[in-house]
Image 1 (cartoon, rainbow, N blue to C red):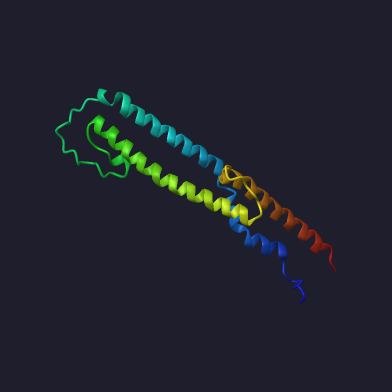
Image 2: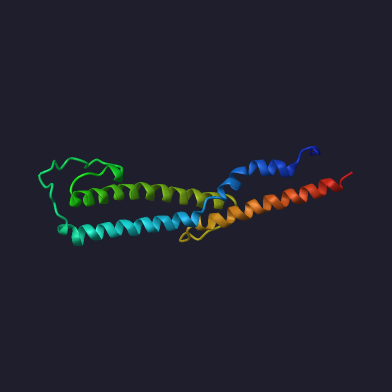
Length: 157
């Protein structure tokens, strides 16, 4: 079995790992920070509901209670200040649940990817935080390999 000398291994590797190069632009650490900030915001709204909710005037107390209860977009919330606060809390809780499921699934996929690539992680570690530097190193390797391949090819007869 002979190798095809006309085939550019660096180009093939670069093409195969193109998705990795694109993924290096995703700031996984920023994603984790954004989720923590979102959790903090939800906590502030919950605290406002629990401790100061009674201070809001309920000028529309006789308004139909079902109005806006099924709202999924925070910008569509209507009603009195108290009703808007309650509905905002419900909308954000739903968003947090969906985001938590997606984030956990992404973390499991990142852990599987790292395991596939031979990176062993302790169970307690955050795979997304480990994924970002790994992808950068893999992209850098591809670049160095491409440069080395071109040098070798230029020296061949």
